[in-house]
Image (tube, rainbow, N blue to C red; front, side, top):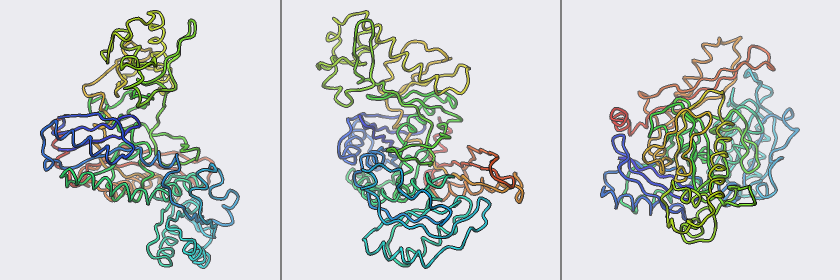
Length: 526
């Protein structure tokens, strides 16, 4: 049996999944201490289901812990940034576009040294090892324990990054080094930012891993736990400690994967409506469509893989305002205070949930509290909620053809009417905890984003190499080699580079190695 947990801004959801079905589920308000909230949710889940802790094979956790920590600059480590590529890459220094708050919290010593590669793997200049050793002594003198290393075209050849890491660890035993080639994609500044972010979160990741482990141990669960990452797959606790930045979009990703599991519909729009926001994504082959654009986190431009998600200010706690003939819904919300502030819960704030109950299609709280609301105002508010969602769905569609829509999340009850461009509206059982279901069913992935010179190596050989590298990365992350399939191959010619250059992005996905038999059993029964 597997336990899936998703920690959101409003609720912490937990589910128990066995043999391809949801056995039990609970929903609890998120607590300031995330680990304690997870422990409490799982304790209630086991108590209500009657399943002993010893029957749990694994626990999968999706958390926004690291996203919140970074955006709020809480618990971050100072990071030394080393850029290999001088003098070609000196025009924009590290941390150049960071906000003052994040720069003050994270910025450590900076060095730009000679080295790096051309797009086709040729050396720009040898790695300046003496300069690197001088920088290492400076890092040690300042008491810095986290280093981010980025090299020009490290996605083609990571040799200089790896050599730099070896030198740093030789000069400063125990130092923690993040290589940009392991967390980011093509694009020097964005990849450097991703590496610095990751390095700044590593000490916190160690603390979180220990806290999660202690929380589970206190419940008598000795099974391994895994963490959801941005592409809808899982990574081990040890992998999360090395790459915490890869968990940034776990919440909406879990919801999309859960929607796929609960409906079996591999290609559809998904709207996850919670207490504060509505996240809209697209399922392609059962996985979230990935964003092809650079992503801003806390105002910082990055390029690690993220799902293509549109967030709207529409949720069960969205504030409703009426001004003459106009009724607005959101974007602000009472959030987790809905249990005290919404009219149907005895509060004084008109929310989207109140409109749902007053409109006669929601059975939540005390219906008598909204019976005297103006019926015209209620109708206009309900129409506005549906208009907001319909506009968001149109923005996410890639064609005019109608598509099915899967509604999940606790706020999915807000939407009941037909929407333009939607062929079928599906609200599956357990829709309210789809995010935790998505965490529970997670698999393991490996991906590659490289530039190949196809004048030297043919296109077919380049794609084969990318598939092999992605498969190797998936196995390294804990996947069972026998279950791995290639789920994504993007092959893009680069017109601005000579020599038949092509950018190839490839992803491999497989079952967790230590749970393979269980997952295959679930698939067979599900």
